Image (cartoon, rainbow, N blue to C red; front, side, top):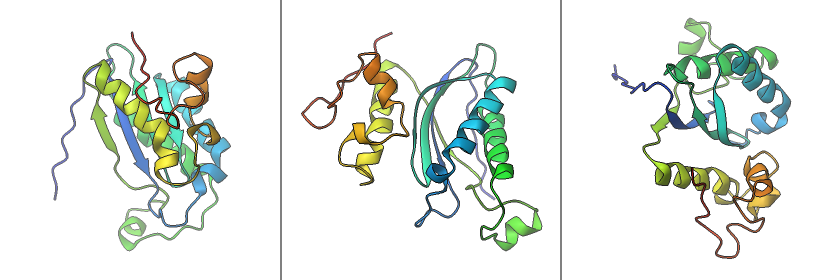
Length: 176
């Protein structure tokens, strides 16, 4: 069995990728976006964290979380978010035999990708990656056209121009 090791640093910022188990032609996350938002809020009330940036794609999501000082447990947050969302979605997905043995739902991949953000450049690069993702995957031609993204908030704050990514306006960053 693979030995997964994670670094837990209290109060740190992390980039995450979280995928549905069945990604092919699956639009569950955007079809049930309100349930997903509810799950994020539910967990945030119980286990505080800050969502610095997010993009919800049809079959996966990317986000940057910052944990509060003294708290390093992002894994419990993802477990709670996935669980809350899964309980709200009607059953009917394909369930593998291994998941069936464990009495698990089959909505989410079991694990997720986590990357500790080391500095401001790392943060900025992942921020750009998050916001460019809908164009990268071909769901829209312009970043601004994807509604399920924090990009719009960053435009309102003056961090990105509205035409970012389409006129050579890459690498606009947040400076703390």
